[in-house]
Image (tube, rainbow, N blue to C red; front, top):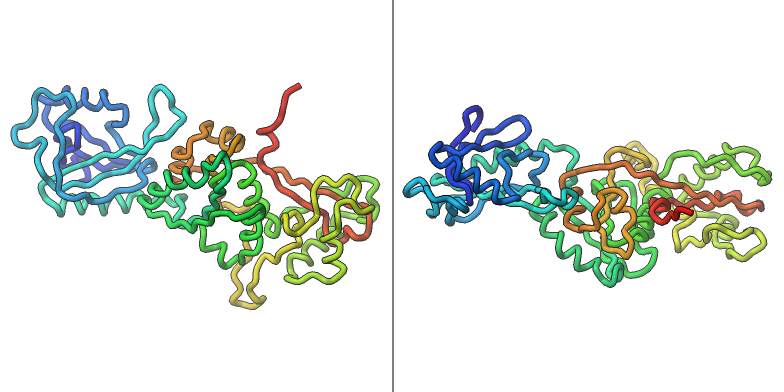
Length: 382
């Protein structure tokens, strides 16, 4: 298997020598007399390459005994070796069309050998290699918006769900039932339960993604607030406001005065043209939920705070605009997004923190905070 490689049959190409390198597999036609035929077969099929990178392989599995087809345009074949029943295994990888490199599409390489144990050995070895890709998720929470984009949410998830299943990525799927469903679920989730997942996926549009973003950050974002605007003299300094915030995050219940301050109507004299609503049900107040329901003792699960390097957010586009996806992957393609998530690809995304200050003592609990990732996507140039 190492070094010089091993002879296998590649479906649609013929007999090849497969070698394992540090970063992937490579194969060459075994018989020089049919070399040009095999390479012509590869060239004619845009899906096939002569080297497979482990970073692009998302699954490998054994198949039942079956035929391995001859080269697509071969005139000469090795007698008795092609198009016969044999043991097989398949490598699932990704490829990009040559004329349009942005979308990713699944691609299969089917190899055959007369010995079943040889196929099993290859499968186990390739699994070991792709499992070394540490950035790949193992367990994800998935929120599906059933009404977004004219009802495309559920349909798109049905399309990409088999990819996650094949890649052995566990998914906990929640179909949202109302506005704020995703926010309430994540804001009330204990850190112990959140640590069971490697990330959260939105199957919807920009609105669902931002709702998930706020549900995660509302009680877990650790950075300080921006300076108090001039003229809002109630907060003498930013440290006092941060102290109130820390107190809120360490208590699971609010006092009567605090609750009244949070549930105040947006048309009261305390609110001067509010940027955001202050109701708890919409999830816009950061003190609406405790960050952990575990007791404070030596066995307590460490708090989850953001930003961090291990937890990911993903989006499978199903909305009407999909500005976030277009600004990151360049494609409104659910399959491309699903494959990028499965393979653990990452890209940094700027998040805007919007803080609304009040001018009355009722704002002492904390300012109203919202996070957004799609401001730039809706910007217009004048």
